[in-house]
Length: 393
Image (cartoon, rainbow, N blue to C red):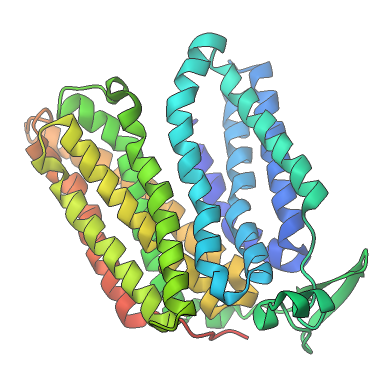
């Protein structure tokens, strides 16, 4: 319960986070998010044995971190010109994969030396340091007709002033607040649903591998993932590398006019998800730890490559509402994680009840086939329904 409560808070704050970033600016919401979860992490070690406080702390951290990605995408949509969107989003998002890899390598040693409370203090310290840097150097975006925007060549990437918007001057910089969000059009937009479907699948596969791969190593292969040393970092390092490769390829295809934005998104999304599908389905076929690490690394790496498709697409179709669309999409992704982890547990319980041997990789086929088939399904949905054209003004 203590672990899962984070995801409920995280899921509930995605759309409100996008709305808040749209109203008061992604810079402020992002700073608020980091300060809130950093303070929460700092106070947890004061009384780590009280379960109620731990539950509240996990919930608060989940709520606070739910603001992060909608705010980031609001900031990127306002600051980054179209020809740099793919690699900017990919580079920004790849940090969480590098952080996961670094955490797997460093945190066990930190816990062994300083105890489990040190993890919370380390997170709080890093969050506080980042918050200070963000407070000092981040700023609101200028208007599209502001000299700064013109000189930088941002064009219509930044938010123009229209009749349904308000402008405010703070410290010499114009910021824009949209007074009305087209919720109905967002909800009934097929391209938005294509993004949502792919975010759902991405996080279903990611959370299932994150949460159940260690168990598969212990039961299905008879090995501990911790015994794999630095190789256990490979899936997340692969995500870091392939995420950035996908972003660079996408921007190259678009800026050189090799492919249109629509075709670029569809090609990278399809390649990423289809290759990941085959890798996921192949995991139970390998009976050695190295083989499973290889397959999971390929699966997660190409899923990250596919983010140059669906995970940037909301900035193509709705740059003005990028944070809100990201919030909607990421809510689906978080729910997918909750559903995937729970469903996997139920599948294994059913296999155990049917007297199947969980120490045999064959008993785990359904665990990996389901996300594999979801990858195929969502890639087809994206091929049929997505577009790279701007559909929300």
